[in-house]
Amino acid sequence: MRSLRSRLATCLLGGCLALSAAGQAKALDDLIFYEGNGCTQDIVFTYDSRVARNDNCKRSGPCDGDNDEARSLRILKSAAMNTRIVVFDSPDARQDDDFTVIDILRPDFMEDQGYCLRSFEQNFDTPRENQGILVDYVRKNGLDGKISRVRVIPNGTGG
Ligand SMILES: [Ca+2]
Ligand SMILES: [Ca+2]
Image: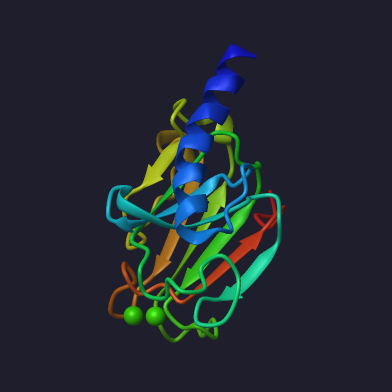
């Protein structure tokens, strides 16, 4: 219980910042997107790993208003196992521009502060060595600071 409480406190610290900035973050949001690489600078938007979303950041959802801003993602340890996150350069989720698929396979492997995906432009295919995260980046010409669509797919990893 003690570690759960400290995890929630971490979440609330991040969530409060996002709430005052965007007015739309919820306390359970466990996917925290940052303006800078390495989970630095401002929180630009947050998502809940247990709620399916498919947002065009030019039009709707938590990322609306922060098109082409996010450069990194902190996944809190409280995130749901087997959630898939897909971020696209294209607002229409076209696959002829950059996109990255992030699978949360084993959040229990993460450190207490969660896992910081420092850039969307990288691949991890060894989740045991990367705190339970699998990352597949399909490159065209760059994705950090270019994200225009966010999908959250609970139970989307097929695992
Ligand atoms: Ca874009
Ligand atoms: Ca691109």
